[in-house]
Image 1 (tube, rainbow, N blue to C red):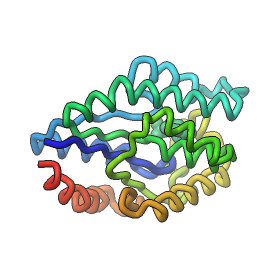
Image 2: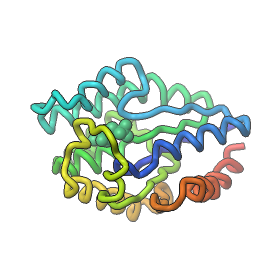
Image 3: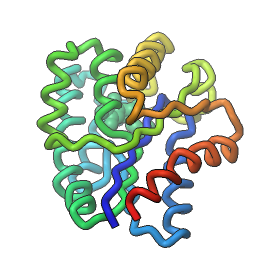
Length: 206
Ligand code: TMP
């Protein structure tokens, strides 16, 4: 079996975590050797970084410090989880990866793309997902679905508009890698649509 790297992206409330988990369970049930992970988080060190990033008490965290923490989280995640799993021919599904940084820190926090991109490449060790599933939803719809808000989720709807636009731009620029799904559809329908995109890839790695 060849390795396969799949990332899920989308704004808050898009339903991406639900879909990522459903895909993982489906692949497992079909007998695939599959790893499910997430960012920020995914390793013991990364979980500590996640707590700093999402703690509403850290309201003085600077934009650059935030960027470096997400990148530190990713560097650890790559080294400890993603790279080893891919080297062992596994399927890796991650709930968020580098496109999140381009969207949130790049367009959301307005840190220049020329700065974010090269740093992201260092953090990922050049690893790019084979497939990125972007679940698209309007911020006004997504934010309605959130109950208890973390530090990032306290941001304005305009912040999420910029993020959504950036995600859609990334999808347009990378049509082979990034597939967009309508997050307003019933979860079962989205799941079915995702499986239709995954099936040909499974044939390739078998
Ligand atoms: P989650 O809600 O999907 O667990 O993600 C946690 C938050 O972290 C979410 O608001 C998006 C944000 N985030 C970034 O701002 N930059 C990143 O690089 C990543 C991975 C997440």
